[in-house]
Image 1 (spheres, rainbow, N blue to C red):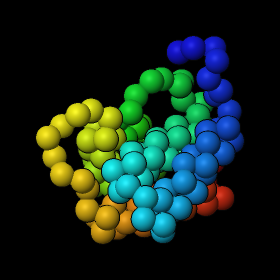
Image 2 (cartoon, rainbow, N blue to C red; image 1 turned 90 degrees about the horizontal axis):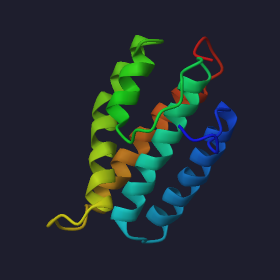
Image 3 (tube, helix red, strand yellow; image 1 turned 90 degrees about the vertical axis):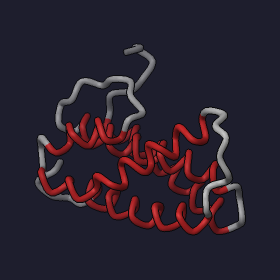
Image 4 (cartoon, rainbow, N blue to C red; image 1 turned 45 degrees about the vertical axis):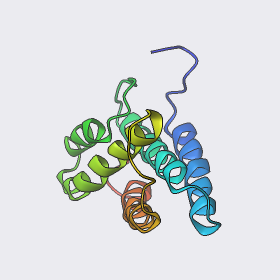
Length: 131
């Protein structure tokens, strides 16, 4: 991992919050749903990495939220409830990142996933035994 990337959890949470605000704006003001979906994956990735870093995890490059979730579950099994969201948001990342032959993502699907993602973030942010 590059020395240029912070290993401070709060830096990752701040960047994740920036993405969260951007997703909210895109969804509220009619922005492209595929871009909102991509940023949603980025938002979750940053929050999940921030959580793991707060546990002493060694930062590594991955965009696979399910892989990150597996590592989070080693600290708290109740995060298993977020497996479907992790899978869906990872798929959003690849759909936006690479030129597949697919239609634009449904705004409703992206919004629904966003609201479920906020529950994962809320659990990560909750001052509790997780930090």
